[in-house]
Image (cartoon, rainbow, N blue to C red; front, side, top):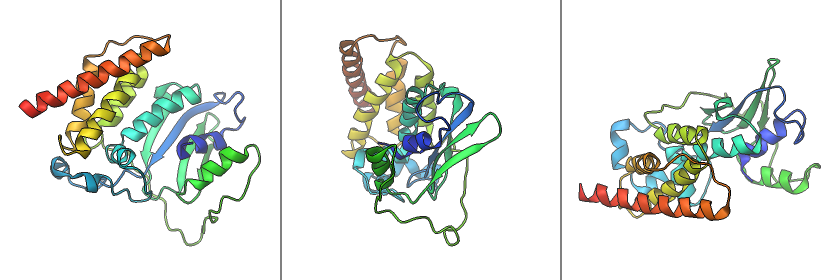
Length: 244
């Protein structure tokens, strides 16, 4: 259960049935990660502990790095297009540092519906467990009078090239998101072991995508083959970086 997809589900006017009707776009929100204000010139020197210092959530190190690169949002875009039968072009990613709004649905009639709450995974988990009912999750209600302003900004694609890679993969055939995910896992693992730099992560993924044919898949075996081949290519790209 991801908070963003759960938020979109809660914002859908017609629930799970007919959810794509009347939608202009889905809006995925992001904190921007721990490096949102780090000068671009300093990103090459970022260490794993810095990339894992998420401003709002305590998470595992792999997903924390994905948050720093915003690859997590790229993967969420791919997931949302499948979960909600929506074209990737209809999914927008925006930075919302407070993470009070967890995602939104923009309708063709001018309405925009948002799901708000403190950034706490107990809320989407409780919603998933109890749906269509509601149960006490242990999370406090928002203090609207004292929570301060809510800010929004467009992500800088020079800072977050992973978003571009993920969107391009989502708009391609089935093989590309599979390759993107596999290559990213290898690249992040290598960064966490300090074998590559932070800015090498999207370069490794891009290298693998460039060598991946855009094809549809029909079987689990095909998925496994593409995943394995992508991991091999990612390791080859890392080896080439090390030699250069």
